[in-house]
Amino acid sequence: MDAKSSSEVAHTSPDSSIAPPRPKLLLPASCDPPMPDTPRRQLVWIVFGGTGHMGRSLVKCALSRGDLVTAVGRTFETSPEAMSQQHPGPNSLGLLCDVRARDSVARVVERTRQHFGRVDVVANCSGYGVIGACEDQDDHEIRNQFETNFMGTLHIIQASLPYFREQRGGRYLIFSSTSGALGVPGLGPYCATKYAVEGLIEAMLYEIDSFGIKATLVEPGLVRRDEPADDLEGATAGAGAGTGAAAATPAPLPLPTWGHFLIKPASEPYAHPASPALHAKRMVQWLGDKQPTSAVKCAELVWQLGHCAYPPLRLVLGSYAIESIRDRLRSVTEELEDWKHLHHAPPPEVLEAAAAAAAAAEAGDKQRRADSVGSAVGQLQQLQQHVQQQDKEKGLEIKAEGGDEDEEMAGDSGGEMQDQIMVIT
Image (cartoon, rainbow, N blue to C red):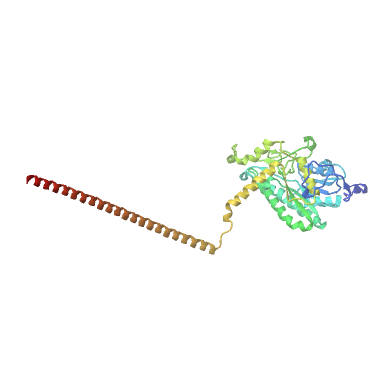
């Protein structure tokens, strides 16, 4: 069947210690990653989507460090012979699978257990994406994305989880993307599948923790292919690199391909050059093969995830992914702060008390306004009385001064008359 010779089994024994090459990048010390020049346990990997540049880089990385790997290609993109020749050697097994079919996934897991004796790490790099406005994508395209990205992930977990529980340990490394943390115009259904995967893994993590099983969502940014093009002959870029993958077969496709996605022509309402629905298309065409995140470096860190003792729930790779997700979280936090006062409605008694207080305050305001008006009127009346009193006193003074002048004039005239009388006499 798939039985190995005794010499091969001895070479790949789980207890064998391997001195790994010194990596250029290391996970934080809090994860307890495999350190250079430190012996480590040999692990058995299953890498779904092993024909894409992310999955292929991960397979090569694990094999170069002495691990045992089953590289899984998709049934409609390559052949069993091509898969068996991709990574020749006793430590590699090449299989085909359609993750949309539960039985197909179960056969891969069982073949791996028969060939290597166990399974330690399951990595899902497969994916499918269509670039186009939400309105333009038909049911077949949307369902195919959900069947591949979400149901495929669920099938992989359901097929391998019983073995992980039985051996009281295991590791899931599920490739999501920045599209699982923020909506990208032109990738609506694809983002929905990634959001669903994120929710699935986050919920499952609580369920399986008591079994010693760990899971990590790997969220790379825009990943470039670091391998030469001729090194990928015979394997299409159909399995995702964190940003997802599009079906690519040797036969001509009904839709044009670019990178890892199928591009659907935009309908008239979304066809103008500045349309937000064309954002994803503009991005992949503008970047081409110049994506900023290295698939080889990502594969190195993901391999360390398989060997570290305390893996994180999420591993975000690349400055683009970090900045994009950080901006998204900042926006959500600000929106929560802006609208948090609407979150909890006060109880009826509090509302009644608040209404009574408002009514009392309004009544008090009215009384204060009335008192203020009355006080102003009183002050005005006092001012008028004061003015009248001043006017009255001023009138009396004027009158008194006038009487004195009359008396003086009368005295003067009387004296003159007496003088005249005396003269006459």
